[in-house]
Figure 1: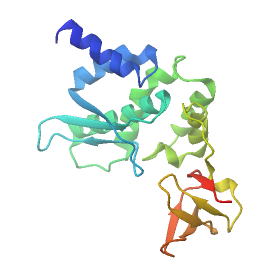
Figure 2 (figure 1 turned 180 degrees about the horizontal axis):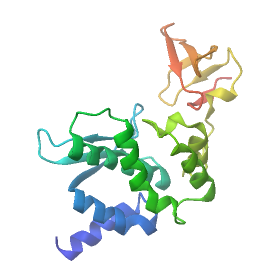
Figure 3 (figure 1 turned 90 degrees about the vertical axis):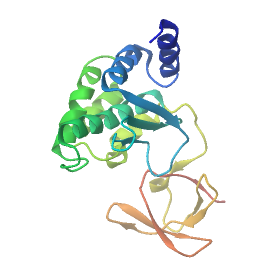
Figure 4 (figure 1 turned 135 degrees about the horizontal axis):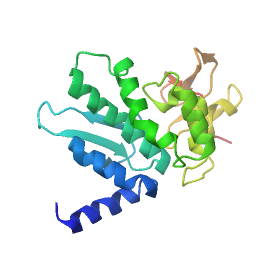
Length: 208
């Protein structure tokens, strides 16, 4: 690839990642032949991996609104899926032991350096004891990463609101907070009267 193109790609990565990891992540993208796409914010996921079953290309997409530490973790999360696919195809569970091992191996060079702030590094070491399908499976990691979000707003965690409080989501839908059920809150839509399950750390705005 021409030098000017390499420089351009690294400059783009530098807008999303900690500067000290840009070269290493670029090299990983090249070695694993990843087509990386930064996409709009998706409420259901931070990123995803698509195996080369139809296109012949490994594709990873990551939401544009993640802070730089969250972006790095999400990228390596999806790259671990790629490595599992190369070894096992679709014969193992998506977030089984094979994926956990690949994810931890990919993360290891970064958690043993000064890439992550101390509070994020501490939360990651705890998370590594049993990595989940999403960072939202670990409240400590969520809170440690949230401190580094670029945009601070008037949203709060749902768990901080009293039961029966009315709240609004960033997309404009309104709900009333219900009781906790199996670590999540059962909330009723004020528009449709249907019930929905929310994670305790879901970002919402209290209605006056």
